[in-house]
Length: 125
Image (tube, rainbow, N blue to C red; front, side):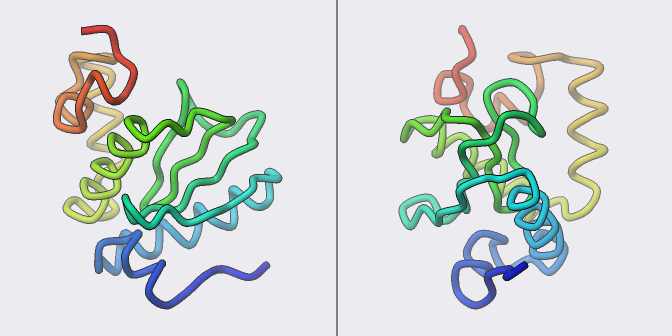
């Protein structure tokens, strides 16, 4: 399975080696589940659409890859790009940090979702 390298990978992972690792794994995962993978130049993330499962809510960002069925509005991609920034900032610890925050403060009360923009993420505010 061909995993992109070069500028799109660097941009999607925001130059973070740990985020690049997660991005590569997420691209393999998305392709294994039959996703159509494109790169969004404006927000600097890979968009893996057409998935039937393998993500939560309307979509999930792992590293610099947004996994979804068809939830790809510009507002949502702007929201998900901030999650890619969070992956770069926190590295491999972001997944557990996000999960702990989600368990304590679900959905629109999650600090990571608030930072990413609730309205852009489709949360009712």
